[in-house]
Image 1 (cartoon, rainbow, N blue to C red):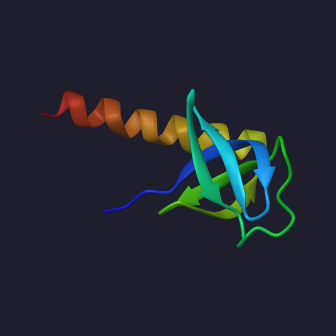
Image 2 (image 1 turned 180 degrees about the vertical axis):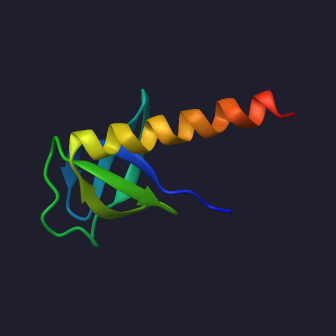
Length: 76
């Protein structure tokens, strides 16, 4: 199973952007999100930003993933 993960765009050069994923910086392709700007939150899958998110939606995704991790730890 592959998960998409939210990140915040910090720098853009052409179709490439540097995004912050909870302190980890990664280069992602933003060609699928033509209106992406520095400061936007995007959901990234397989190295491609696939959709812009509000800050609130990005945090909701992160909270959901954290809850799932806690439940997995509890049940293993």
